Image (cartoon, rainbow, N blue to C red; front, side, top):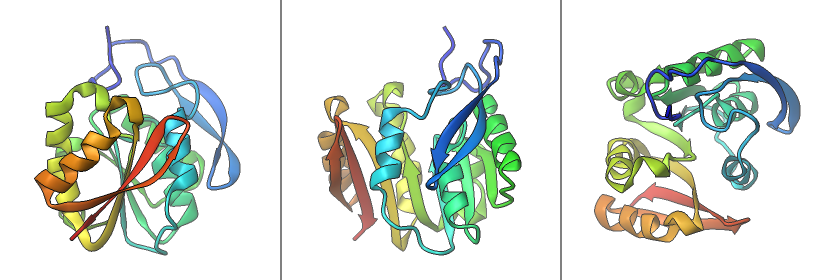
Length: 201
């Protein structure tokens, strides 16, 4: 069975058009099978977009595990002066994010595969990181992902993660504080999800 965290999904890319609300406006986007939540903006991501902090006017923003791009597109629409990097292991997800950014006239969205993103000098100091992280890849792989990315926050940077309470949101917050030496507050809790806000101490 193909998973949305496969690099090259084997399933046919059955594309479809969705009407969704991003940055307080209704827009048209393309999704496809083989990526995360192809039929709608999933509930966790909706809670993150609703509860997220105000963005700085410009800077380096990262959508970690971008899927077809809702978080990256929302940030890019809100802050045209920012550079928004959409990162995913899934090639189809990156293709869809690029197509959706072009469709919306967004030249500030830069989709990158995970390994390339980690090597990119622009991403060594991140102002905003937002993610609906792939909890189902397993705790070890998830921790490795966060170890690679969260320490890249700028001194005044902010990471906002949405995690289901029943999938370990509270224990993940405690792990971030203990293992990464960061502050991690439970910013909000709604519809079974917590928004975790991580900053450098």
